[in-house]
Amino acid sequence: MGGDGPVTRTTVPSWPRRGLGTLLGCATALLGALYFLVVGTALGPFLLWPHTRAAALGILMAGARRLVTLERVRRSAFFGDLFPEHYKASDQKVMRYLAVRSCTGLLCAVVIALLVFGAVLAGILAYGVGRGTLDWDELLTQVLLGGVLLFLDVQGLSSLAALDARTARECFGPSERELLRRRIDELAASRAAVVAAVDAERRRIERDLHDGVQQRLVALAMLIGRARRGRHPEQADALLLQAHEESRGVLTELREVAWRVYPSALDSLGLEEAIGGVAERSGIPLRTRFEVAAPLPRPVETAAYFVVSESVTNAAKHSSASSIAVTVVLDGARLTVRVEDDGTGGASETGSGLTGLRSRVAALDGVLHIHSPLGGPTTITAELPCA
Image 1 (cartoon, rainbow, N blue to C red):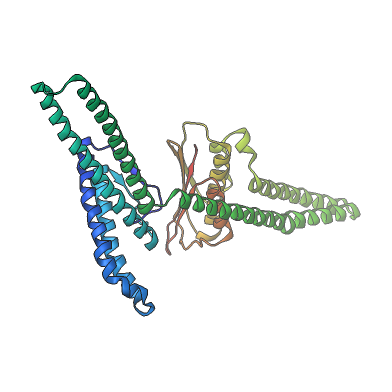
Image 2 (image 1 turned 180 degrees about the horizontal axis):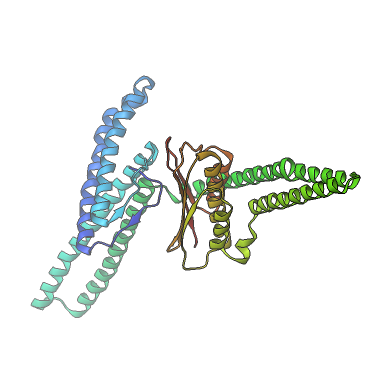
């Protein structure tokens, strides 16, 4: 029994198929009730004794899980239910399901027996009408009473079928409460990860400004000061020329820092042009394939840009790659961003850059896949929902 998603249903089976599954469910419910009665009674003393409780419980649960597996197959074969593949129900959930299933199945058998009995009485009534042995008052009374009982039987059968489906969903897949708890945990974790990623990004920006731009500005100020104090025009001109070159370098580095904070091209030109800017600034040849025919939500565009930017930056710094391929494809309501380089591989998924990307993607309910074996290539794929 497995999986993490909810139970789904394929095409709805025909009425005869579901009816056969319901009848088979009555038989499996009787089997479950007999299992509880016979095996439970036989293992009762061993379950009460602490020294043998674990072994007896193991035997009881082994048989219970086999019966529950049979019920799972019945639901899949006759009702078209598709259950998660890797979800394992707890012992408590299995026993509760088997107990409820046994009771509802046996009750369903009683309701079906009443329907059969009612059909026999209807046949007798029709036979009496044909022979003329019933007067109209008695016939009307019998029809009204039979109609009410038929309505109650059908409603009871429908309610039992719904209960059977609901208990199967709760046993063979995460319940709504479990899914809600998981979602709350995921949101809490992603919120903490986003806060940590933002703090790490701020520290990196501060480090870039302090160690890069600030140091170059200090050098620029020193060059201008030396030029002002210079006594020879030739020396002053040379210092001013050097200061001019240094100012251009400062502007370039400041522009790089600003792009790492947020690329203005995203607002003015869109994602495709912003990725083109990454390609222009990259020291490695970069091929891009952009297949997006519809406008994207702004958070998705931003996340996609940073996936490309951070992946290209990591490849240029650490992978010794000679080429990078970037693919951005919109398929329905999902944007797939794929960055692949031909470097040496071995990218660390716990590094601050990739951890920040994973948090950024997870904050949008997306998934980030990293495949980087030693020797390469490295492939980073982000799947971002756009709905």
